[in-house]
Amino acid sequence: MTKAVRIHNYGGPEALRYEDVADEAPGAGQVHLRQTAIGLNFIDVYYRTGVYKAPQFPITLGCEAAGEIDAIGEGVTEFKVGDRVCYGGGFGGYAEARTMPADRLIKIPHGITDKQAAAMTLQGLTAQYLLRLTYRVQKGDTILVHAAAGGVGLIMCQWAKYLGATVIGTVGSDEKAKLAAAHGCDYPVVYTKEDYVQRVRQITKGEMLPVVYDSIGKDTFERSLDCLRPRGLMVSFGNASGKVDPVDLQILSQKGSLFLTRPTLYSYNITRAELLANAAELFDVVKHEHVRIQIGQTYKLKDVAQAQIDLEARKTTGSTVILP
Image 1 (cartoon, helix red, strand yellow):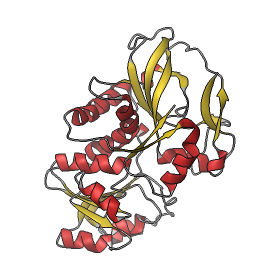
Image 2 (cartoon, helix red, strand yellow; image 1 turned 180 degrees about the vertical axis):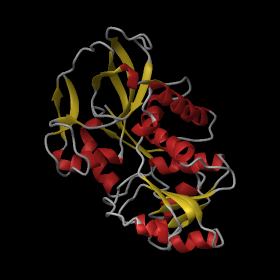
Image 3 (cartoon, one colour; image 1 turned 30 degrees about the vertical axis):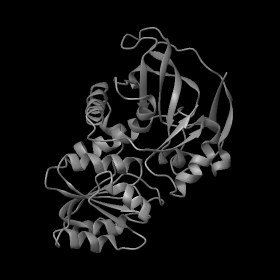
């Protein structure tokens, strides 16, 4: 047996149960992983509350972690016992130990800690596909990143700055504004005090933006469209404030023939080759310190409910790591 945090139904933080679960041996194509650090992500909240539908109950939540392989199933040749690995995606992360498919794992390079890997794999790969694939940020671009002081936001600010972009970022407090500024955000905008559409207009001298990256959803979607120049791209990749209302496509034409996408990490990492190439690009910018992984807080596995409460209340900064 091993300890894990599961839900048996949708609900509030009280739906998260810290309990014993069976610890299975790896089958063909699988490895057994003793986890050392686990990432916390808003997608975990979406599945707990039912915004995203769980495939079955009970289910162990958590989609990002790092650990050490301690057993290997038949046919696995890419890994060996003792390898440090990480992953981002799927379910089963909120656990001390687990069995999982080997082809979902990524070797952690020398120089990157398990905590860093757990804090950056899903969030970093998200930043990678957003900045490098969904819209390829170029030197001279000015972009808007909502939730700039969050885990994904801090990575995006640094990476975009390294690419030569000017970064505007929305944050919820002066403290978060300072944090975002320290991580590459040129213009932190405290949305409780300033109108970010007006600030974008001022900063760009009315030219507006080629792209907006929005993980907030309902509260920011419509006004984010007003930040775009003609033929600009609206990238809606999260629902922290709730799901976006149905969109009348005529709005996109009225505001300048805008483009709209709702991407997912999986769609940009369908093949093993894509996953490894994208991860290599992420690890490279971290190892060369173009991107620093900010771990803002840690919790024990048994305290995941409190971690999610703090995440939903926007009390966290940077990445959050859960320790088994």
